Image (cartoon, rainbow, N blue to C red; front, side):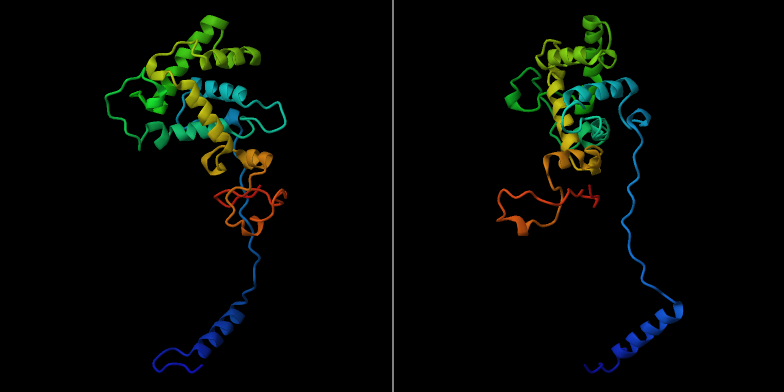
Length: 234
């Protein structure tokens, strides 16, 4: 191909580049994936949003909602408390992109949507001490200090509305349960599902870019492990 007048010669450019590389002694260096640093243990984690008493409650509660005993990983192994702490510290906790103007009818049917003036973070902040006090009165200790069987009883009472929270906080258990499930199955980028253990357990491949080779392969186990949005691989 002929070089255009007034433009640098492509041939000369390639020659110069090759010569420069030789002089500099450049060699091909294999690329390596960046090592993933192991996060601090939960008992050494410093919450960015939750107070110590709130953090203790969340750790204890999610440990019973998705317990460690069983076939798959539990909420503790997948660092669900970290996910909840991070989400409450962000837009979700502040209800930043929700319509929060009144009027509110906190005791209206749940079918009418979010009817409390409180944000998710405020519900956690106000409901946890009330429930812990109920646990102290009913079972002698706050939730985090109870044995597992009694924790299960207390959380069941909360689920059945036997604790009688104020209407503005009545959805606390359903919010807590939803956040626990979200932290368990969300992309590790958001703090939970540590090492994609939940995805690996259910066989979910994660954020892989293409599955076109598998569209017509029915009842065939997918052989590749999950991938995070960040590029981390299980």
